[in-house]
View 1: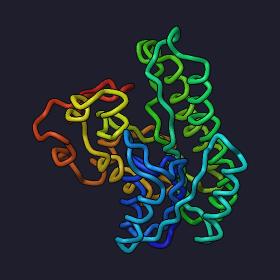
View 2: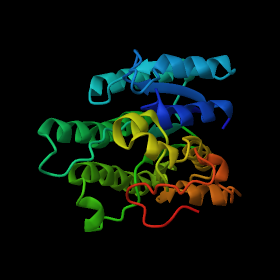
View 3: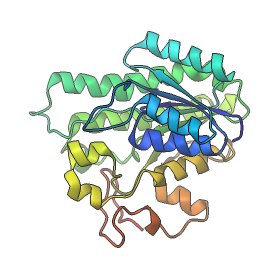
View 4: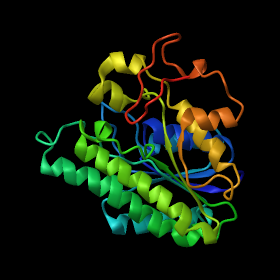
Length: 275
């Protein structure tokens, strides 16, 4: 992992920031890519606050303001990353918009936002990083999206959001075959439980859901594990965080719980109970 470079979208807070900080601690250069340059009091975090934390700890981070709905901004962000670090080895498609609304209550602008970021943005980020991934000796595309269980009961409650997230997983699986000849791995990663981010606490489920969640560290540790594995053996799968960590030798997940001993809230699109 030492000396490799990760291009992480949505890295100004939450899961993206946790992955950025974890990878940097392992010697990975990190492009902290997101829109936020001024802190939202409801959500916290900016590209600069994450980069400063990484650099202060001895890591190497480059904050890049980028709205992945804008293809020209993506192209510029990729160019900045390559100019600074010499290439790109890992693409972490973490940026995502969410609206947990049914069909009738989903406004067209929210539908468009989710598909512009989750689907189109993920596609374009990966597309423009490809020339540099092909030059890497251990390239990996990791997309934060759910298992491809498209049962109607998962799609029905939040149809527009579910469509966008399953599209992300479909791209991740397709890329694992499309880029196999280039020795580029592609996987999806999803948490078994809800993750205690500012968005969950302040915008989605409130304090109660946050207390019944795990910390972003579990996703960061799972991401770090798979990115460090063989791109030939570890590709083409929708992973759950627990399964990756068990492969890494972790069997006790208690340290990741926000509230020790609490009954944990399963995340969307996950059928089994947390371990």
